[in-house]
Image (cartoon, rainbow, N blue to C red; front, side):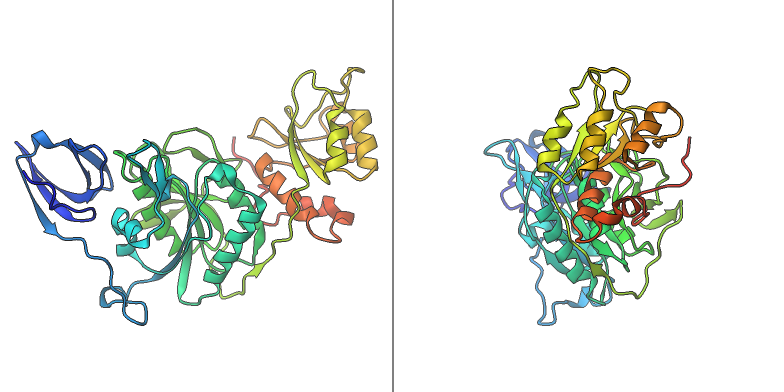
Length: 423
């Protein structure tokens, strides 16, 4: 049959030997396969030799907007803002290289994610930058926070969705949690491990659930993504208590030292724990930040003189200590205690978290911990190392805060501490 009349975004029906399949026709570099986006959100590839016939149910039409920005079908929909920053969720396969390239055109984004535009009216779309998440920086965090703040100030917009790459998504979630003070609406970050034009992509469920949560009651920075490897529901996870725990699984992100805020389905939300509710307050943008902070992982036999290097170039260091928050101490060749005392006395701020991820640090169980506490090391309870790094940069970036940096680092600003930990 003639497939040339099919265009990306068309609703089509294909007849096979024993069934008919409806879906959205997607671009595909493999000329021997038809790629369809099913109603379930799954993408499937069907060999052309197995297709007996096909027809177009509805042609894809580029959205025409009135002068006021809305058409008739959108006028009664609830409104959201969308910020696109890159990553796999905003990418499609590049047939020339076998890699992916960004979806920067809004109408192209609409073709791949029609359910998003069916659930809500996307009143504003901003693309402040397109970047792989491993290349993110504090300058980008600030740029993103400024973009989100403008949308939060729009009274018609009920929630904001941010699409982002997975590798450093939890760092960005922490940064936005600290930069956006007195949050009054949901700010939802979401992602994909496989681009939308690949079979079994996780992108659609993540984005549809992100829309559902953006219209909900939780006025916090959260990450919404697959709760399991199945396409059933997502979790909403607090931005300061989440970490990427797998390189490629759909459910790569897990809550750490806390429970998920909610289960999120495409059509409902089941709240599981307490959260800050949406309100009519005014959001304050506070992006004072310094990059002169570092994250240092302790390992057996490590030379403590590395501290002198950091003391010369940085204002603060977060140490990923062992167990309850320890560093080498009772070996005269490798003890960190003398250099910690010296550098802290000379102005270096040193915080400690645990590299075990789960649980909390405690300076009072062993003498090692008590020595560190007496030296001036700040024990950050159950805070994640990535969150601790971002928070230390945020605290030390504020003029005048260094004199009470310990109090600021131990202040529960954005849910980064959890008083009671589950086993």
